[in-house]
Length: 89
Image (cartoon, rainbow, N blue to C red; front, side, top):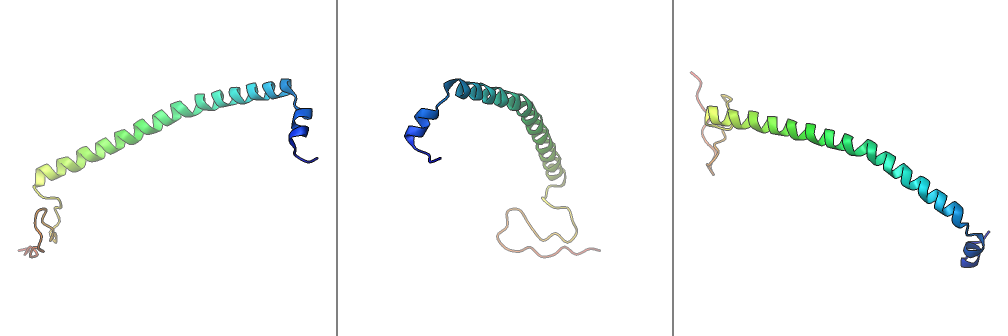
């Protein structure tokens, strides 16, 4: 059958269209009831992880006074030139 406007009007079944529309709406509501709480939970867990990560890394920076605590660290936070390597004695 060719898809024409005349066939659409001749074959249009309003009751079936409304039933399918209702079934679709029910399906959308069911998926929303499943996905929205899950999305809120996952988002909350991600935010908690990032907050804890930020807290841990900010705490380490405040304690040491530098961004990296390794012996071979050659990076200085506010310097444009490369710092000399530290000598370990």
